[in-house]
Length: 246
Ligand code: C5P
Image 1 (cartoon, rainbow, N blue to C red):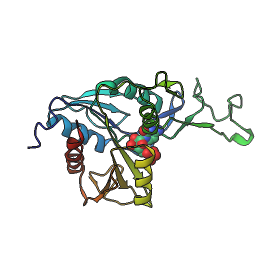
Image 2: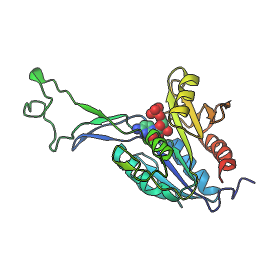
Image 3: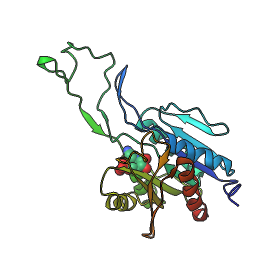
Image 4: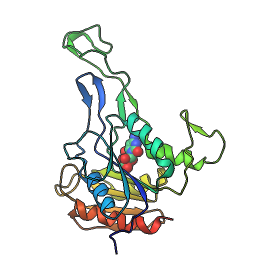
């Protein structure tokens, strides 16, 4: 049965969106509610796993019986993922990680008429210079491909020494070309599975309690799941991860 099929496993789920600071009171964020990730964490807990939930700021209660790590930024999420994956069996990245962050967060609140602040122009305009965040899953794929090579490094990060094979699952929130974008992301991030949802539908994506997903598998198979509650999508995902675990 499903109950207990994750007993003895350590799984990591990331959830929510990251917040990238502009100044002490402002940030760049996104519409991720964290519901999909929290449901994945609760489902894995109920199946017996030790669950590590790495969460951006969300309005959801901390699930009972789950090891919760709260982060704000993509860089904090990346650090904690690397710190915890060495003895994990699975990593499901459902978090909406910001692709860019302000190059530098202002140390004081930016004022409407503060032309000393870098990026502030005449006429009261303000520009914020953004730099790319690391793509955690893509970077990890590169590091694992180099794994074993002593001193293999990407971007100053050395290859994590994993104790067991880590099943990696990514998510993709898309507004168009779901199949092409889903396949491309599975390939680019070298994932075992990619779950793609169409966030332009009213019954799928940010903030909803239901989701309509496509699941892409490393062998090229694709499944088109019906609209389901996020609890059901979470169960369907773990049903497919369990057989992949060594
Ligand atoms: O490329 P895209 O951002 O659409 O990919 C989404 C997937 O990649 C999600 O699983 C997300 O958690 C992960 N991701 C990541 N690091 C980023 C951006 C996204 O690991 N900087």
